[in-house]
Image (cartoon, rainbow, N blue to C red; front, side):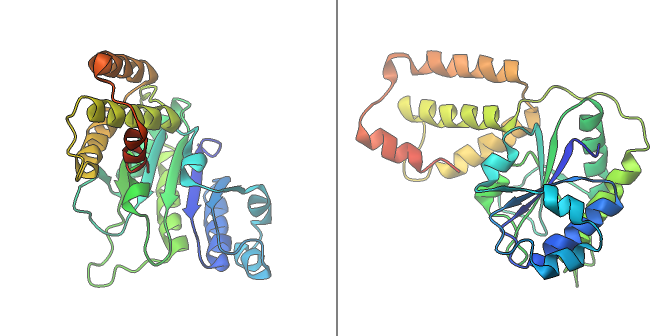
Length: 250
């Protein structure tokens, strides 16, 4: 599991939290840390809070976008402290660990994504996730700092690693899925199905549907073939089409 699980931190504002996350990861034998546009990194405080997990900090990879950090992952689980209007498939930490163990046993790469300290992940960022994991803390005081949240999930991963898991399906990588979703938006636009005033709501619900299906690469190719056939001669063109489709990209 340690070579196939990636902890991804998005726009962390406090460098000390990165060090504390590195410490939590090393406690539970996780080794891959990815940072998306951190505001501070490798300061004295970051290294001090890591408390000996300096090697993990040195290997950490920096990315300009969440999409780039997830491109080679086949399962993405985002951490969220609150429910959203559009409900994502949701796991508790133990269910999350069991899901991750099944995927990594089959050789699949998994990303666990944690958002900003104050505001968490945006809806656009959650669109890239197949599941959400929610830590069922005290509803009257549910404030967990970033390192605490990572520690809880990492502990459950460590415990799940000792339980044999059944193999999981060969789910398509994020990059392939995102290509499919862009194609789907184009096809729905071309055939006149989308409401151009508010297309995002429908597309978000379709994302949830296809995430639940856990599409593999072959299934995505089939669906894209169907989209090509549906577009046929109805493919619309012009500058307006390109501008409109830009709205639908995460």
